[in-house]
Image (cartoon, rainbow, N blue to C red):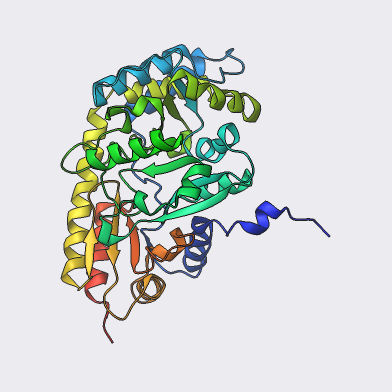
Length: 390
């Protein structure tokens, strides 16, 4: 008999893997499913990125293993972009490292800073690797509900003193997946102050920083005092439709970043140089990002309007490319997702599948705006025919 580790026994099945399975079963049976489930962009990777990648494959024919921390050119491109976008200067030699996307980096992060029995503070609902990475390190997870009543910010005042004393990492994620909330400067300052007061690392997942519709989201590094405790993760996946390229970066002070860089040398052999070259082209071009935002905005406006029209209790879509919709009376997230899949062949993610411990997501479903504009139009037609109320 194969022995399964305690880590795998503790971890719930990855929510999106199960969603993929159900969707594919329906498709195999001939059903035309419109998939708002997993947040994987279907828009083509921009031509400027693809062309740079093609050239780089030949230029890098003899490049061998890449640098663990990324090429100097890539780190310089990240620093230039960060200064243009956030007005924050990073030293590319000491304060930036390349990552294989965000997921692996987030999962590995606790290896650098957390010992078994330490506490990791995690938003709930939230990105599953915050939890799985902590549990792989045998840390204690303390979940912070993202309640509608608190504008989808964690209530840091509710963290017991004994928990704060044992905490090593506080995860935040804004613009937030799944609630779509954009952080205020006041909240970010509160989080920074909490981490300074309690000697906690503030790990800020900013993978959706470029997907917004009105005001530009800030980075935690825009906040006074943040440099002392803050660690930023970002990715090219959503900004430039580069999910398949698996490339991102982390930024922090030299003191904070160095332990994580040591973990990276033990766990992978770096991001391929030709992918880093493609990423430099992506970071140097904002026109494709503007076009993507316009595309998502058109789909968001259409879907939000329809969801309100058919009687959803409330609908949120401040940032990211998600819509976070509250089920009408008589439904919870599971029953509503099942109804939409059964009666409209529309795949969504129930908020309960994104939650670990709290009930904060139990009344919400998440739509990822990845189908085409034409598919979104068709989905809106189907939604108008669904009977939400018995």
